[in-house]
Length: 512
Image (tube, rainbow, N blue to C red; front, side, top):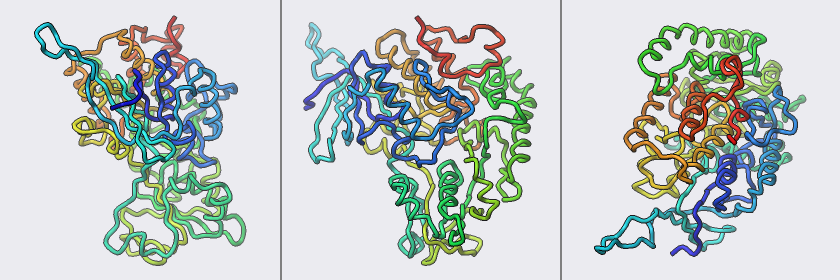
């Protein structure tokens, strides 16, 4: 039996959890954070050198702008943590947070106080979730009861994805050190430098964490004793040095209403679909313009790093990575090498590839990602867990927030866009109004139909559709959320700005 009862429970104290706590603050929610700090991946799964993937002004809460709103800079992870804490303190969110409180189990029990009608039949009560929490690594579990649960544990961090290896060819045969980027993030500056300095380092991966780590490795190996690190690349993705293309701001290509008009979106109707098809050459041209700039600006062909797929597919799947300024300059100095390979395994002196070549190594770092679904599997009970599984790997969530078959539970932070902070915040605004019964949801059938349509568009837009990414129709997605809340979907002052200015969090301030 739960010893503590509240209306709202929130699991996770990252960006999404803090946004949910602020928007639901009238209900005095309880936020369970497993660690001693807010921040999520920005605290526990980022390097000191990690920078935000979007410019500063595209990553801010609608009611709390950055003090320094320089949109040409990308803040470091430490700056983002400072900003998040300033936001939490400004809106008095910290009082809701229970730190060092790890959720180990969730149970659905229904309403313990349901009443009977005049004939003695039970009346339906409010759904109740019980949450089992271990505090300060204690083995004792304290139980809490909530009418509504918001899951904000996120898709990244906590549980690493470790590749599977043939028998007797795994890390156990390697005489050097093997670690995941999650382990690397836990090292202090002295420990990380000592790990990389004058060592033959092999990094597996070519996404943001792998790229940032390669630069840190190169910087630790300056001088005559330094050794180059090698990035082993299986799947190529487009990388971007900054948010300018041939002198044009990047947002013109994808983040305005006019630019997103070229892309498919849910519920667009026959004429809109036909127009989108007829204008597809313009969409491909925009992608080609960006590809031509990146090929000219970066030595992608020199190092065999030019992808075969269009840039648009990486953008549509939220796979685009921002390069550190000195990434290719370190490669030009010989401090970063590249190796293309689809299969590999360990031998005692390093790693071996399916083409028969071997690579000596002292340290192997796996930048192979995280298993967000496994985090959910550890706490969410059946049959609800199976409702979150989908063959494509995407979570079927209406408005990227709720599964209509799971009562009184929401998920924030499981759908991505160019600015995940904005994506989380506007859904939390929608969620707070849903909890307060300010609007009614469509039927379960219509919600499932909407979710299916969105996933079908993601699949058609990109071959990398195993993550829920709405970047090519994010404005339309926000339009529908606004309309459901009773807000106007047009957020600008005039039609020119409406068509050609970028949309960001500031456009979605609370309506008075």
